[in-house]
Length: 217
Image (cartoon, rainbow, N blue to C red; front, side, top):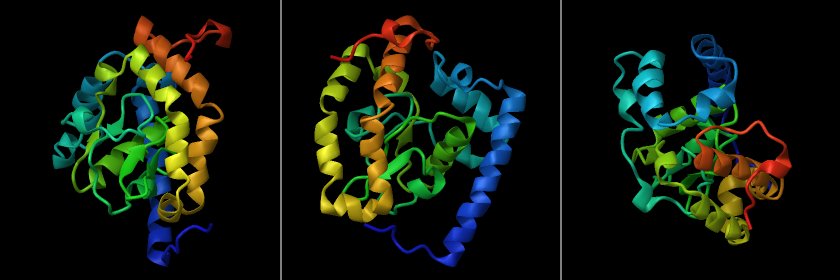
């Protein structure tokens, strides 16, 4: 399986965007803090992002309303638990260009968050993915809806999601990137989800020994 052909113009855009993301990440670090976990894993993250970070990033921009809506009722089932998720997205295949570490497509080219942001660069990329999604189907209020029990239920279904993502059409639209979803779910995703469950249960992100984290089974 090979990556779909990328035009020279798109390659140039991706390279330019990567540099822009790196610069914006540095600005956020200077404004907020250098510890991404402290920045990202907080109560009312959606309000913080929409009222403080987006206006700071682009004052008076009309794009600052991109994450104002909640799409929990139409949430794509593959979205990995956390603040960001997608509802019914378009099929333009723009998300991975903006956020290659976090956005993937199902077999119908619908976007979903396969991994929550783990750095300031990831965060900027996901916000950009939300900005270019035609239907505006991205939300950042997942912390309001996810619970420990819902996370455990999602985790029990992970092999069904892997099976769906291994179908020919899903592999075709994702190219070589299709393995990222399965590799993540079979790798560090379990610890990430346990930490998120701890956050949901206790209100703060853990810096604990792995054995102290809540189980998923």
